[in-house]
Image 1 (cartoon, rainbow, N blue to C red):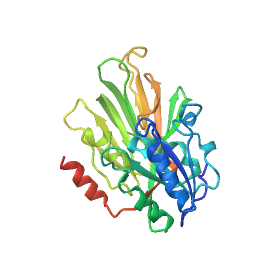
Image 2: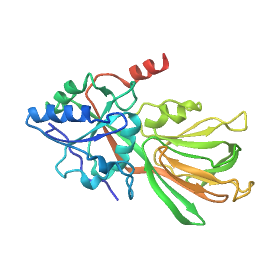
Image 3: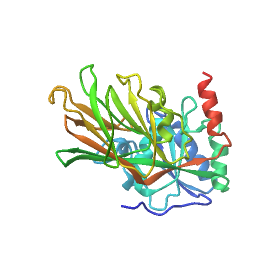
Image 4: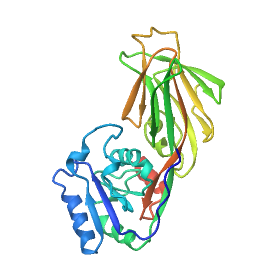
Length: 296
C-alpha cells in the first residue's frame, strides 16, 4: 500500500518518543516539552505504558500519535530512531533524533544543541532527508512466514550452533551465486555504516537509493560485496546441504523482528514503497560524521 502524504513547513505540533533507559526520569523529554510550551507550541510525550511491545509495533504504537502531529522527536540514539522510523512509517512524519550518548549517524542532535534545533524547526530553517527502506518477505514452501520493513538492513544468518550456512542468491529470478558463509546482509545506504561496514561492506552516502549485498565471513577468497540498483528483487534461499532441524537460519530486520528459516526456505527483499524522513538542522555533512567516526 502506498504511504500517506508528506508534511512540510513550519512546525507547531510535536510528539516525543523517549528511550526510558537513557532518559529514565524523562528529564530531557519534559525539558523539551516545557520549552515548546513556552513558545506556544503543542507537544505530547509518549506514555511509559506505550513502550510495551504489542502487536505489530516494536516500540511505539502509531495509533497513539495525534493526527495533527507535524514532527516526532526521538530521544535516545540511532537504535531508538530506527525503531521509531519502522513503527511510524505509515504516518510518514519527519523524525528528529536526539542522541543521549556518542555521536550517531542518524541522531545528529544532543542535549546541548536540542533547543537551537527546536528553534530551527519552528522557524522552518531545516531540511529533510529521504531514506529508502527495505521490504522483506520470508517464505516456507511458498507460504508467507513473515513480512516486515527495515531502514538499516535485513540479515540472514545462522541460528544456533557455531557453523556456516549455504545460501543461494537470485536477482530478479536469475541465479547470481552460492555462498557458504556465516550469513548475508542486504543493506540500504543508511545501513551501510552499520553491520555492513563491520564485515567489510562499502560505505554509501545515505541519500542514495540502492541495495548492498554483503556476505558475512564467507568461506571463499573471491567473495566481494555487490551493489545493486533499488528496483531489483533479491531472493536468498537457504541451501539444502545441511540438516534442516539442526542447521536452520534466521532472518532479522534491523536487529529486531526475526523469523527462523530452514533448508529450502527463502526471503525475498525489495525496495519498500515507504521511506523514512530524517530532519537535519545542522550543517554537519555525512563525510564529516564519517571522518570523525573513522578517526576514533
